[in-house]
Amino acid sequence: MEAQAAAAGSILIGDIEVRRLGFGAMRITGADIWGPPLDPREARRVLSRAVDLGVNFFDTADAYGPGTSEQLIADALHPYPSGLVIATKGGVVRPVRARWDPDGRPEHLRAACNASLKRLRVERIDLYQLHTIDPRVRLEDSVGELVRLQSEGKIRHIGVSNFRVAELERARGIATIVSVQNRYNVADRTSDAVLKVCERDGLAFIPWRPLAQGAGDLAGPSAPTIALERLARARRVSISQAGLAWLLARSRAMLPIPGTASLTHLAENVAAAAVRLTPEEMQAIG
Image (cartoon, rainbow, N blue to C red; front, top):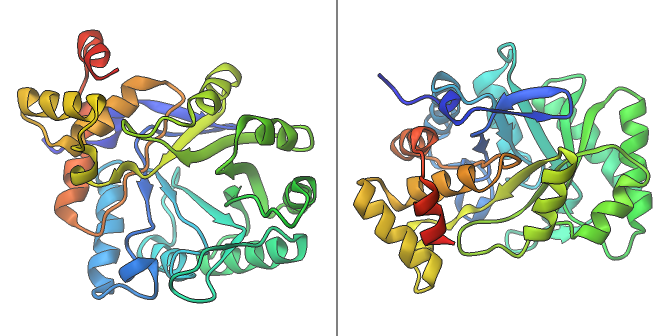
């Protein structure tokens, strides 16, 4: 029997229930997250296969490509099956391959949202996230524009990304925020305080780069990563599977979104949904 994402259980994003192991669609693009992939048909096969394996939450952004990831998702999966949730982000621009520049101006966010709606071929985006804070723009102005887009029916739920606790509280002062997407993995827990707020208040916490850059990074010389590597050997799973299992056990608010352009790695990642770590194993990793 194939491993299914449903083994991870489910989580609410606002009033939307999704399986607690999603798919991050950043790496289906070209090198450096720029332009189309070398094999667009393979990228579409990966996306379709994720659905076959029970994944029903896909996370992307207009900056991935830019625009390429959203377009591939629509090409592969539209018309979307019932219950499939596509989340995207706006607020970062890519003038050249090496740059990821924040742009939280209300007029940019409106244009970005409208462009994402068109690429994804939907009338409303289930979860639209502010990709990052633009230091040149008042946070309230950026989030306020998302509230206006929500009132117009273009956004169902609002999320934020790369936020600290104080910034999250400011955003929640003017909008109903249902999720936070911050970097988080066994080697990087700097967002623990944000995770605790999400646990307390019922927000989904979506860890980006849940495996750092991959098994090589997670096997680095720190106590948690050494413990994780030891656990993976003992359980006869990959270190990536152990890292995902650790995230799922770390918090019920956690919604990992491992991404890949490989069918083999996709199957490996989804199989992690069925790996259950014991309290003793969690304690050993820390």
